[in-house]
Length: 415
Image (cartoon, rainbow, N blue to C red; front, side, top):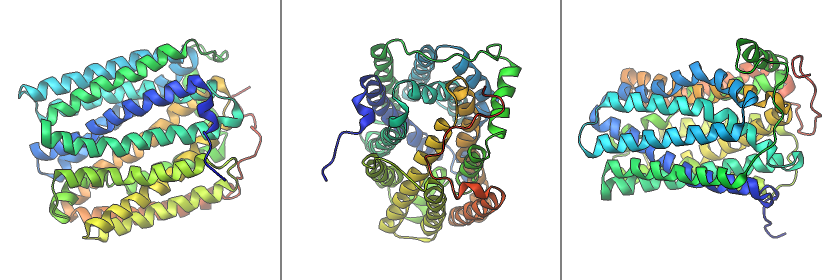
């Protein structure tokens, strides 16, 4: 059977957003990996790289719940106009400071923190907008294609980042990222007005609205279990921040090879997402999800043990493929089991777990690497993610039996 156009891309408004995100994510990923390299050039201590994770997670923890309430009480498309414009200005500032020689590691930390504030408001509105652009039957495919665009940008971004740094300098990467946000702004303009169900029980952005979202999560064991598992796996097995050290000190390669290594996870993720995009229905989603996390942990251990560039690249690609399966399934579970008027707040809680795991994991990895070395930090992280899975499945065994065709069951606060 030949390849077919993914059904979600047949809906033109979703296609506009998907294409705009693909371009923007490429720029964002270029900047992210350039920041790791930049920090390592300014300060060789591994813990300095962990500071990037801390700068990114604190604003998410502080502002995500507010961002979720905003997504459920305000026009999500308008929120995205503001967040994307703000992020573009921050990237431009980073480029100017770097070009004119005024950049310090603290500038990087502060600007990264402000970008995380934008993400805290952008994420809930963007993810909650997708179910308003496609029918429910095409939603799993829409999340598969959204993940594909993210990972495709994550392939191109790191590879281009290393090449651009080598040819045009660090500031050029930041300028490219600033320009890339224009693609999303154009897409949002072309989408036009998007009807959404505004939360009625809550008084807009309020403590009551935030509490309502948290109570909904607690009333859904399957959703809560996927969030916790996401956090645990990415907290322990977050090796990205150590990539400059592993590339230069362990594998003994330069900035271009660093870019290739940085793109490896995304290559694996894109391949698996393209395969899933051709599958009409995913069944036994619980078992697939848990199996993917196990593979994720084992591949992380292999990456930490190897001294071969080729084996390291393959291990990273497998990590990306496993994470791809996990991400697509858990996003589908959460969105299909959540009513529209509370999706923003559900997504905001998830964002704390989703962003908190890898960002706090970067701080943990940097600290462990500072004390015991980068290979030990990576290997112990892979083991920790598998042990975390065992504990979570023991607590919520119903996740194993989740099939993917279960009807939405009203939570205690979603009436």
